Image 1 (spheres, rainbow, N blue to C red):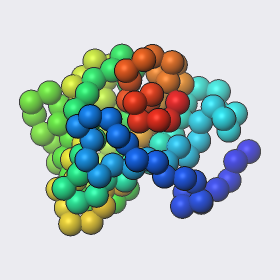
Image 2 (image 1 turned 90 degrees about the horizontal axis):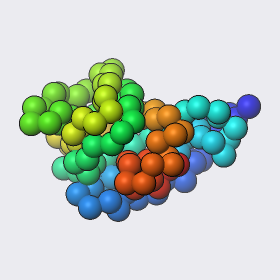
Image 3 (image 1 turned 180 degrees about the horizontal axis):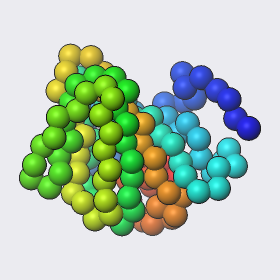
Image 4 (image 1 turned 180 degrees about the vertical axis):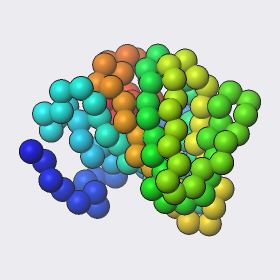
Length: 127
């Protein structure tokens, strides 16, 4: 079992092209003995964004704090605390912080995604 406060887990910058002011923490993953999924916490500064990208795996997102939007292809959807998002495999997407404070969200991905080159999980340094 792993029990830890998220602030005790190192945050690393997302340096993928197109990312601005984005950091992530790998909260739970393979290194912790989780057999199927990785749970990540993204923190995006005001005016920041994740890279615009697509990948072969799904992921699930839950917004904890802040105001923003998620781009689905050419359409934007508003985000606020409590919003959940399902990103299907192959969907072009991007998360943007439109508020004055940080945008924080949980993102869950299957471990198999960390083995696929060019996916967010490998590009964002959390596989």
